[in-house]
Image (cartoon, rainbow, N blue to C red; front, side, top):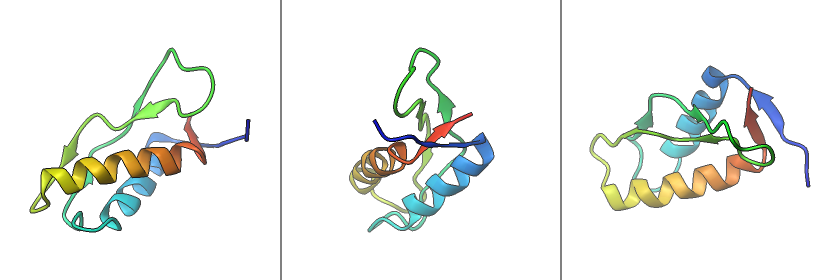
Length: 79
């Protein structure tokens, strides 16, 4: 398994927001923070509990959240 880089909640939230807004149709979407998944020992140990969709469509945001969590979850873990 590849090592991930530890990030604080604020750092990871900023990264996720930038990645989310970069997805098609999600320019107005944003998250308020990420949440630690305490029982996870390996891999992505965080989740996105809430998304403010703004003018974005729910279907676009749903797809984007899954994509962002998958991509950034391989690179970063929450400390």
